[in-house]
Structures are given as C-alpha cells and as structure tokens.
Amino acid sequence: MRKHSILLWLLVLVAGCASVPREQAGVGGPLGVIGVEPTHLTADYWARRAPRAHAVVLDTGAIARQNERLKQTDKSVRDLEQLPTALAAADARAWIEAMSSRPTRTLYDEQGREVSARQLDDWMASLSLHEIAPTQATRYGMVVRRADLRTFPTRARVFSNTEDTDIDRFQETALFPGTPVVIAHTSRDGEWLFVVSALYNAWIERSAVAEGSREVIFAYTRKAPYLVVTGAKAHTVYTPERPQLSSVQLEMGARVPLLLQWPIETPVNGQHPYTAHVIELPYRAADGSLQFSPALLPKTQEVDGDYLPLTRANILHQGFKFLGERYGWGHSYDARDCSGFVSEVYRSFGVQLPRNTRDQGVSPALNRIALTDADDHEARVALLREAQVGDLIYIPGHVMMVIGHDRGEPYVIHDTTGISFRRGAGDIERARLNGVSVTPLLPLLSSDGRPLIDHVYSIQRIR
Image 1: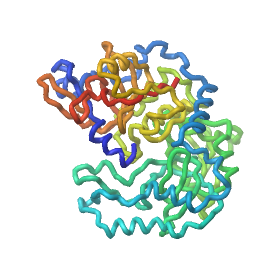
Image 2 (image 1 turned 120 degrees about the vertical axis):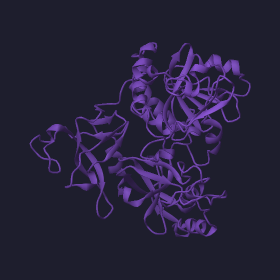
Image 3 (image 1 turned 90 degrees about the vertical axis):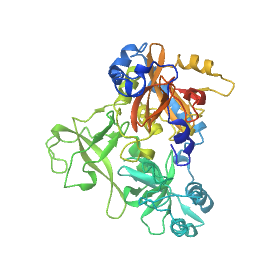
C-alpha cells in the first residue's frame, strides 16, 4: 500500500455481514470475529478442503516465463540491468520529485503537533535537488540489512491525524538484504541515498547500502547452490566477530548463496559450522564498499534448497505462517502490509509481484479477471463462490488472498487494520484486527455500508 491510498483505509479495510446469524456475528462468535471459528485458523483445515491441494499450479518454467513477462509488460517493474551506463539529471530529478513532492495536506508529528511550513521547507531542502549533476555514471549498490524506504530523507514519523499513529505517511516500504539498487542521488546531509530498485524508488539510509560493481552485484543474485527462506523470517547467528552479519533478518522468499564446499572443520566467525548452513551474505565495509562474507544460518531456521512447489497446500501453509502478525504499513513494525504479505507468500515459490496493490491488481503479466460497474452484486457473489485457493482479490488499496470455502462461502486471509460487519439487529460493528487475519469475504462491508465485494475491481490468478 502507499501513503496516498487513503481511500483504501477509509473505504476498503472494513468488512461486514448482512446475512450471517446473530450468534456468529461480532462478539457473539466464539472468537469475536464474524463467521470465524477456531478450526478456520489452521492451514491444514483449508488444505484438506482444497481440490487437488498438492497438484502443481505452475511449474518452474512457467513461473520463469511469468516473471519475465512481468519485467517486459508491467510499467511498475524496472529491469535495473537494462538501465544506461549514465544517468541524466532529468531522470534522477523526475524520480525524486515523483516520490518527494511537498505535502499539501495537514500532517502531525509524534507529539500531535501540526507539522509547520518551516519543517516542510527543511525536508524539501534536504533533497538537495540543485546538487544533481547534469550526468552521472550509473552507480549500483546492494542492500545489506532490512531497511525502510522513506518519502523524504528523514526518520521523522508523520500522520494524517492525531488519533491514528500506526500509519506513518512518510513510510513507503522496505528493502531486504541482497536487493540490488541503483544509487541516483544523496541527501543534503549525506546520510540518505535515493535508490531505484526493481519495484520501488525512495530514500534509504546510506548505512544500509554497500556500493559495488554492476557485474558483481547481479552475479551474486544468480549464485548457486542457494537456500530459500520458507519461514516467515530467518536470522543468522549472533556473532561479535562480524557484527555486520550478526542476527541478520531474512524474509520469506529470500534467496541466499550456499557455500557447500566450506571445510567442516573451519570455524565461521568464531563458531563451528556443523549446526548451521554456511551462506554468503553482503556487508558494507568501513569505506562503504560492497563485500561478501560467510555467515551461519542455523539449521533450525525454515529454509529449503529451492523455491517451494506452487501448490494450493503450500500457498495455504505459507500464508498461515504470518497469521496474527501485526499489520505494518509500508513494512513498518518489522512486519508488512496487505500487498507485502501476498508478495512474500508468492516469493517463496519464486513468483514475483509488483509492490503495491494498485499495480498488482492491474498487472498485465498475471491472469486477471477484471470487474466493472456492469457486474452486479449477484454476479460478483457467483464469481467469488467459484474463487480458487491463492486467488488475489483487489478492492481500491487492499488485497485479500482466497483460502477456500466453508458452507459454500469464500474465506480469505489478509493483512488488515480491521473489518466492519452488520450484526443480526442490523447495526454495523467494527472489529480492529490490525494484523494478518482470516475472515469470510461475502459478509464484509465497506465504509459506505455496501458489501465490500461490490468494490472488487480485479481478481488475479497465479496460474
């Protein structure tokens, strides 16, 4: 999700019920969430109900072709290897201005004070746009730790109102270790870089990026053999000998080179490697240059020797690994938001998706079912009752993933701030879920009181 998707939060992330019996609604249900019972909260429950749960939906060749189609046809995705060897000032300036435009609405700081015009002036000046060279050699870097991407080169958190401080309007997304970037500009204080990644452009702290050659950086992303993180996250072991590689967090779907030939009797950063996988990770040297070093990933961490087979059962088990995680707008709170959630689930199969809901929902690289105002409520109900496990359901600013059907009704898992529904007496009730949640789909209401499905504009099928 993005900061200017305010409609998503006001219109979309609300769910409801017009036809569910009172005993299932609101706090009257066993879990206080409309239509949800304890059995609904396990992947195995849905996997047992899924038709052909273990059949491969897309094989590795089909996934590779779809990923290539994404690069070729989706304008929200950039192939960094195809950028020219030199960047013009006009291009760098256009990237920065598209992200860091001066806010026009009132914003509030963490103390609840209105952000002043003087403060906005300072943030705009921090962009240092006048320092962009007429032309510059294209510089490449690699992210060495999970790091936020920000609208402006500042850690200051700002909010649309004083009542909701979960959604920081300067938080865009996050990048993870091993991600290649192009370095387009440096902030006035020198502490931030404006970077271009395959999926997003924004400001990142300089300390999170190591600069290296194009050839070395992209060679690292192709190294084999490798491991893929299949848990919600994994961490390298703590090591005082190499702090840059100590307790490094790797997210679901991360691919890291595996050093199979490492001598078993040779310690790694002061520790015997027999209880861990020896992997290779990037780090930032004292001079800012990109270096690589072995690191230990404990064998207790959830990893696999390749991307998982894309089956309905695996989709369910991967999605449920995040169940209950706190909602994190733009990957804040060391978590993820709705589009980040589905992206990371599918990344564990090697499937690449655009970062934001608005781009995912219309991507020409996927198998899209488009809905318009001509599709009435009954037609939408019929369509969604035929939805398949793994289908991605889009309303403005939000995405939900289908996990199956119970009593003929579709259920979804999604990372949401909350849902709204109609109680048996007709009153609309709001449940503040604020995390990765399982809910029925048809009962959900939007803020205008209409069924949420009436706002669905796209269903994307990865198949």
